[in-house]
Length: 293
Image (cartoon, rainbow, N blue to C red; front, side, top):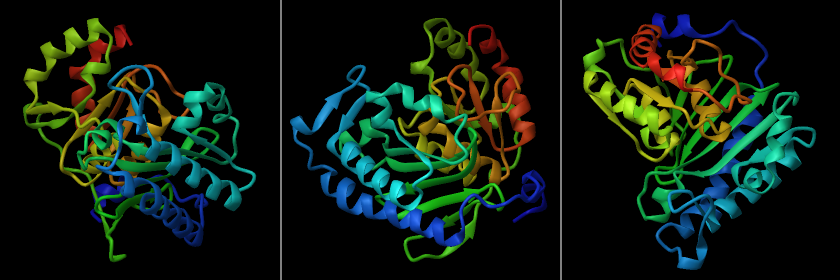
């Protein structure tokens, strides 16, 4: 790990979970993927897929079953914690109201990238974040296809653990000029005025795309493959784990107006960048969004 990455890490505090508890969490996620997600991949019938808001916002039986399994396991292991899943919130939105007051909460996205999953594209993941009073303190992003995981807590650098169990530190990319930056922006989810504004801005950077999967967008940011993720669609299950991992890999994350992110934030634009210098360049370039956020 480089000095630049180490310098970005917060002062040591008590780890949110013990090493044994981290292993327990990972094993639970892996079992859910093996039992409920991967057997359904490319095997879904039409009746196994439903729309939520529209044809781009899908839920499958894999989402529902995996979330239920992970939720049960966490409630047994951490009976005093608040456990919230994306699909549970879809039915009971008020569940989100407890995050800010909870001393320990788990936020689950059982199949992030459901649209990809439902279409048979192997670009999806399972995300779990641990928060204290809304502040992300542990993030886990698991790839069921590759059977590997990126994991970080607020006391140590981010690690990539392979299927064999080998771990290696990861770090974000070095700073670059604006015209060399590549990343992901969820332009289609922005209000019409902001979409129009963003199309006037993207030509100044090297690449802007979207994977329809926050899990892999944050994984690529944390491992140095891309330079930023910008989003105004702030569901906590899409971002809390990735925010913590990005920070622990050496990046800077904040709302576009400079305020800190926590899992209770639901409006505005969140900018995750490979370094403070890159964050400042992009915040300046995209700053006009704040007037409409």
